[in-house]
Each structure stands twice: as structure tokens, then as C-alpha cells.
Length: 246
Ligand SMILES: [Fe+2]
Image 1: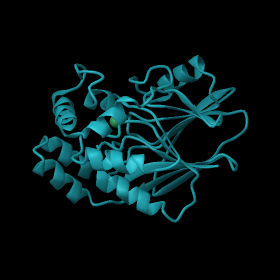
Image 2: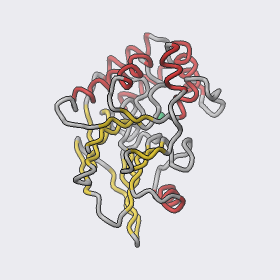
Image 3: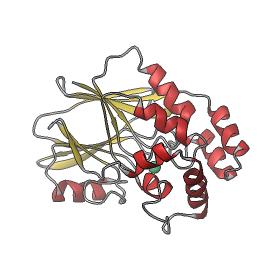
Image 4: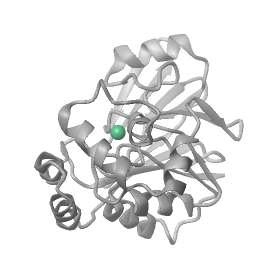
């Protein structure tokens, strides 16, 4: 099976459409979305509609989906994130609001093959930035392979019996062959708001037969997404950071 792994789209329709156009000639069997479909960007409904059109689909919620759909009030959010979430909540159609609210909390096991989580499989709102957090998650779970998002930073952590290893993806395409006896935590990066200093949209493909993970970067019309954010009256830093990838 080939899985298309998408995370942290953040209502950036331009970035999602570019990724879907990029993979339109590749074969994939199932789309997997790791949460944060909305929040920050100016096209929440178009983004949710596009995700809902991907079939078959497995999706879980992210922290922004919870606040934008009214499950949580966002008291932990900074001012810019909260302003964007409240703007998003007012604009979501009743159908998309309900659909977001019904997204399950991770971890979810997909086809018995791997797990998915938004932040971590222990706490959906917690972050894995480096090896110490990754090691903690490895210790407290048993998943051989888990995809996660939330940090907007594409990375692969591998735990072998004697060491933990970090593989940071660089360049437009990065491939890892999963080795037997090694457990993996994989972040496909963010489609709609990358934060690794590279503004290109980031996503992953997982081939469960060949046991390979690829992380890919795709250019999109950043200026168009920025203009929509400013035209919508959303805070300017949300537009500025898209060009920086931070
Ligand atoms: Fe996010």
C-alpha cells in the first residue's frame, strides 16, 4: 500500500492544491492527514472540502482544529493564533465545522500498519522537537512506526537497540529505507506553514510493501496565499512567515 501523508495544512489552499497536483500522477492508495487542517490561512472551507474529497481518507484532529471548531476556547494560543482561530470559526460552513469537530483524537492505527498522532501518541498537544522528546515517546509507546505533525518540521527519528538517530530532510526529495529492528517517528513537515526555514510545502509518502518513506518539497504560489491572508484582514505576521518558512 502507498500512503500519502499530509499534515498541518493550516487553511493554505494554494499549498495543498500544489501538493495534490504534484502527486496526481503518482499512485497512492490512501490519504492520511495528521491534523491542523485549518487555522492561520485564509481558505478554511476550500481546504476542508479538498481534504474531504480525498478518498479513501484517514484523518485526525490537531490543536487548531479543536479551537477553530469550538471544542476548545484556545486559552493557550498566542494572540495571532487565537485571532485566526476565531476568524476561522466564523467562516466555516456548518457541515465543515461539524466534520472538523468529529475528527478523532490520535493516536489512530492505520490498516494495522502504522500509527498517526498530531503532536505525540501520548499527548496530542505536546511537541516532539528533538531526540529527548522522541526518546520519551519511544519509551512510553510500542508503535514500530508512527507519523506525527504539530512542529511543522520534517524529520525522521530512528530508535535501534543501542542508539537514537535523527535524520533531517534537506532538498526536494529525501528517502529513508526503514530497517528491521528499528522503530521510527516520522514528521512529514507542514503543507501550509513550514517552519524549517524552507518555504516549500512539505509532505510524505509511505510505501508499506517496500518499507520506504519519502519526504518531498513542492513550490506553490506563496504570494497568492499571502495576499488572501491580508485581504481577509488576518494578522500580517501570518502572511510574512509564509515567505520565510518560519
Ligand atoms: Fe500546526
